Image (tube, rainbow, N blue to C red):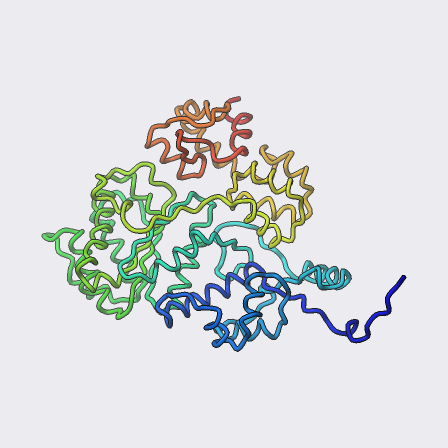
Length: 451
């Protein structure tokens, strides 16, 4: 028995538009900026959002619960209320509410227009393929508005540390803060090796990035020393001129670890600035962010270290849900079992996962990818070659890693040795010692290192 279609229902278009993960993240970040500037950092209630946007509370609740599609006009209203333009990448089509032919046509058109870039390095702020880790991202965005805060962000290469820092800078710029990001990888070896030269370099970069006249630096005094001279310059010249909070990001801090003199002078100084803020309103304008790949080895007394003050944030590996989200952003359709196999191979390393999804998006067969992944002919060949070159360059490294490569779950390692390997992402700490970060390394090293 067939039913007669209702003319009204057959001509009415169902609402099949909802926000994509990147669109929802963009919207939430914009809302957080307004909450910080207009609501003392407190979250808006649904009623307050409804009043601000002119959208009913029930519609807003459906949107955040992602239970059904929303009319595009409503989404335009919502984004415009927070000074955002609604972009194509902010939307996704609910396949349950759109005819299969329409989906196929849309996907075909999108695939011919959108060229996914090769995943390399940090992701721009507007990248649709940034997967948020709310337990880290949201805490960082909330903490940075606190006076005299210190954020310590730890993650090995490839885990998205710099991508998070870019979003933190963007957030602070939106709030009207002054921002400076100093990457210690850009410091010459000569500067790192001599603490006086390092402090001069640091002050020059700070002035240059803030567009301050460095010739007005009247606080450099050999008698006072480089630490106090730098402190006075920041306290008496830089902060008073800005008339607003200064977010100072120092990335790749571990670059100074191997230069004992510079580390013993510079790192305790960062801690002292935070302590000064407990009784000095000028110092409360400074928000300090230190980012590094490892703190397994620090040549410092614990009472002098900046690594036991402030909010510590460690970027975790991607879990299954995050890998599945990234697969959707790469337009890769796979089974839950395939997702688990990539997770086991990569250990949830975001860079390794992204590289696999990029090649699958480009048409590579999943079985072919897995079969060659641990060889120097697979998609990870450049990454593996770099790691092998670093380990093969030191016979003691090979000897110490052998138990892990041969199958040991975790072993105890010398702190200095562990610091070097954690920094390149090869090992990670556990309650029982150190383990290899993923099966990719174990399998590849069995073939190319021990043999």
